[in-house]
Amino acid sequence: MRQSRLWVLALISVWLALPASPSGVDAEALFERVKNLNPSLQDYSADMTLALDAKVSFVPYKPNLKGTYYYKKPDKNKVELEKAPGFLKRYPNIYGFNLPNLQKYSARVVGREKLNGEDCHHVELVPKVFKSDVRRVDVWIHSTSYAVLRHQTTYAREGLLTVDTEFQTVDGYLVLKGMRAMFHFPAASMEATARAQYSNYRFNQNLPDSLFSSRQEG
Image (cartoon, rainbow, N blue to C red; front, side, top):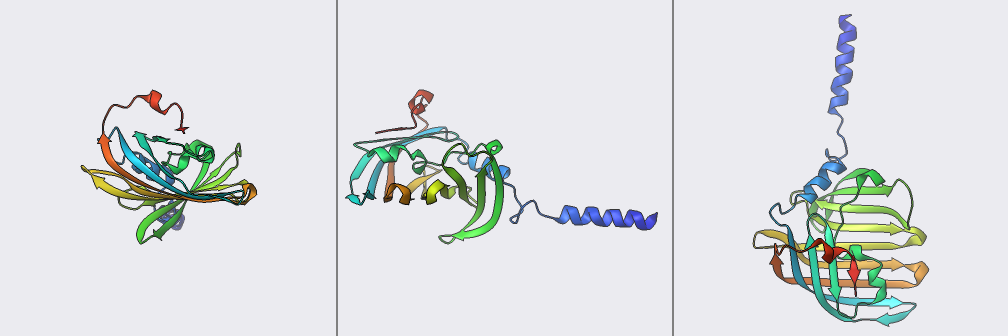
């Protein structure tokens, strides 16, 4: 009897020693930390410039655009750009990261990785049901600030959209400084790189929800 008890205790000890993921955290906990970034910040707007270098059907297109970026907690994003090209409207996730509904994804923490010299948690999200062209979303979350430094969406037909973000501290808030988005959609004969800079922040303006009813406007 005593040996049986010792065997059970040994099994329990081994089970408790197993980490929930390679980095010792789970996806739900990580995204909760992302959600709670800047606790006292409710919303903001900022001036935005966007330099686009694109080839659509092998035709070069290189406009420099200006506009305004809007954010409202926890993950409402909107950009108003002057004379924005139509294809940008199809990919509003280049402007800000939307928290995933984890009930719709199989989530896995791949592990800790270095991204541009920063220590990050790499999370992989695979839709449980494929209702769109999205096949996988990979997210890199900074290990101490919990800012999303990269999110990468893999689409059907070898489509890929990678968004890298750079942050800065303004008035005590960790907010966007710059963004680089890389589009690779061979099936549509489209390659593009977009680089954005953010400045002149206005915080806690009580922005209405109606402002974000349309995700993206030209």
